[in-house]
Amino acid sequence: MPLIAFSSTAKGEFYEEVVAHAGTILQGQRNWCTNLANVAAMLYHSFHASPDPKHQKVNWVGFYLANDRHSPSVLWLGPFQGKIACTSIDFDRGICGLAASSQSTQVISDVHDHPSHIACDPNSKSEIVIPLANCQGRVLGVLDVDCAEVDGFTEEDK
Image (cartoon, rainbow, N blue to C red; front, side, top):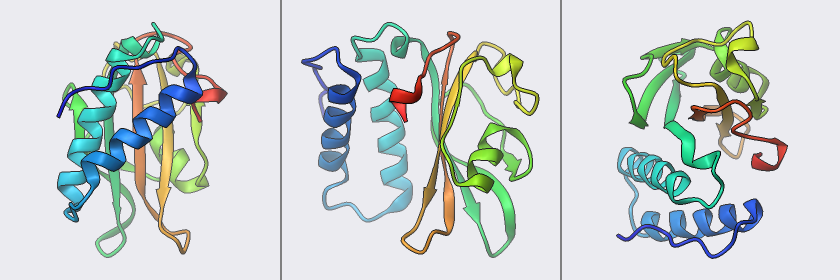
């Protein structure tokens, strides 16, 4: 499947095109692992093809997943693109844990200034973490995107 050729420099339009592309690659596929792997790859490469120079510095995109039956307050590494990552994160640690426990998107402009940041890759300088929940509001995991530049994400990226 070809990468997206982005037609606009506006962030809102970039994300609209990414969502539409995700819908295309997910169509007809019900396997969660396959879908998360393809979405992580699509997002990683879309950021690199983005007209936004900061997005081109994204160095990690992936999912951390909750498993209520075995460890209710731990996120486990799921499909990702980038360097080797931390394999598990407690809900009370790091930006991923904060996003999961608060069920709110975290935009961190400089991770080295954030006291609870877990440094899996010292090259990461900013981060956005989006909680994923089902229709009942139960946390399923988080989408984590790291950038090798300070201020790689803004409130507009939420």
